Length: 291
Ligand code: NAP
Image 1 (cartoon, helix red, strand yellow):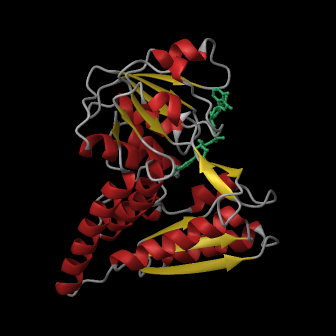
Image 2 (image 1 turned 30 degrees about the vertical axis):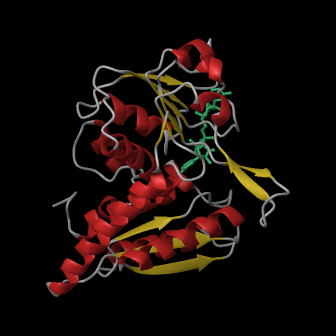
């Protein structure tokens, strides 16, 4: 079994991005600018946004944060989106999800200018991705494709099972894996899938994006399979300072001895998600998607 070290690959990619930022600055061009909009004080969202700002600093990007309390109105938030759309200094921005229930996430996503939609959630980017046009791709699936490529894992003609069909992970992942670049034969499994264990055990490449800790056991994994664990669930732990630890969707101890490659949690997919947002921001700043 070989461990797929997302931390290591993400660090390499960050160094490449930092180099490109230096080149832009040396040519007198502006450095990429990522903005984040954060509503409320959800612990997870606070952490994710803090990471995003820190990541920007580490590669030389400019970043800015726009904070609102939970009682912000949809109109106020849409006005901020319009302002960021029209601000020429901002290359890309994200609105951290989830949003409070009184705000339509879909309406907010659709209000973002697709050319600045570095999360890749706007229907225009999703549509472009589906038909193979240049697009901003949702960070997690984008990062997983990059991991497979950098580890030179053969995908062509392989059976790929994606467990999970969310708009931000499972669905775009399944599309990317079916495209000519990856050439796998894809099955998308979800909570209504019958005989899930057999479906999973048919996979040469198994991608789990469920959110159920240690759900996938050894009997659900084919000998020699490549296993990508997207799941990150916080479970209570007396061994950490924070009082919790992250668990993946895969029962690592059982499965790792059976497969050819596996991503750990943490340190596998997570760092690739973070670095993919930086990649999308650089693409936005250099007009590589919508030229
Ligand atoms: P989500 O929106 O809750 O979607 C979960 C998917 O899993 C749904 O499609 C659901 O099926 C399916 N599912 C749930 N229980 C199942 C079961 N018992 N059998 C088969 N399928 C089942 O979650 P998400 O946003 O895609 O995230 C999934 C996990 O990845 C979470 O742990 C999340 O924290 C993590 N995540 C990690 C990263 C990272 O960078 N590492 C990034 C994003 C997300 P239905 O559609 O039928 O309900």
